[in-house]
Image (cartoon, rainbow, N blue to C red; front, side, top):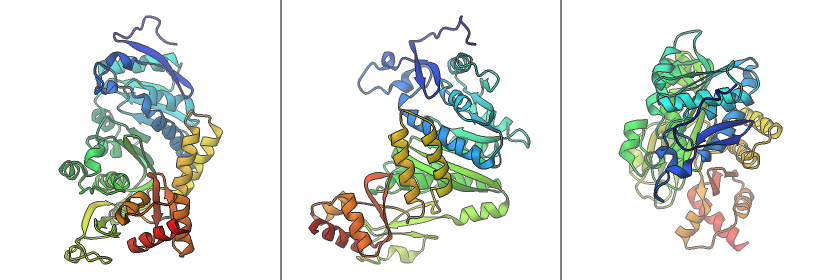
Length: 405
């Protein structure tokens, strides 16, 4: 059990999350000014807001374990307080090994204490290593993991290459990105530099962010002759998250690259369309209003949700009682509805503002689109968003009908 002699050399407190209890920094002690972001000020990184992220990770990894139907190994190379790895070991059935690590010595000691505190010494190994160093050490056959969870503060890009190489065939890569300013188009040059794709400041920028991250993962994996299949993704709070299953083989890598492309967007009429390649004809005029088109990409144009995987997550969520179970249930249900729907979504308020029109409810807008024979589903990315195959002008017309009906 835990070392009775252990004492953190900074203000700390014990919290409960999921099935575990862990010692973490007492964040109030590190917030000196209102603008301070306490988790990054603390000597060991811990963010209570990411509980939802960790809950969903537990469900996704359990769903993956059920799919492969054998014992699995998990690596958390940026563990901070250790809460993520400890929860994986305590809450996921069929786990035979969890390896966690942090280059910060205080994090290493605190994570080890939290492993001991929960009696998980036989399942969890704590390392004091650089994340890329640890992952590279597990890049050889028979040393690889079933799941690698890259959950950094900021961009995950510096870890993607070694993370992909540390996965066995058909393994699962989970990646978080919190640097939404570049991914959503506020700092476009930084996005091109880090993720290899041009962002766009649109009302559906969070979906573009997911697709840019997924596209970056696919590109990095393809260099190793590895293909990817995105099984789940979500945008929550201040971050995006992508879960991708990999597959060894040049043909699978080639197929992944074929899923990359661009999203063309008209800022005048809100028309958008996917494109496999960029051609000069795209920049001549919008097919609906004749205005100049802008674009985002290259990014992932393939599916960002897998129906079967979502269903397994929903089943696990019904079995486990998380504090966030209600929120997760809605998220996964929306993701299942979105799985087969067209890429990108319209935000009703944005259209209403463009038309100087009152805005209907989402339900009324969906019904109006359905009545005209279009596909239409809500989206988890925006509570006022609608995914549809209707052209931009048709969406505008159906909004007018929805308002008047």
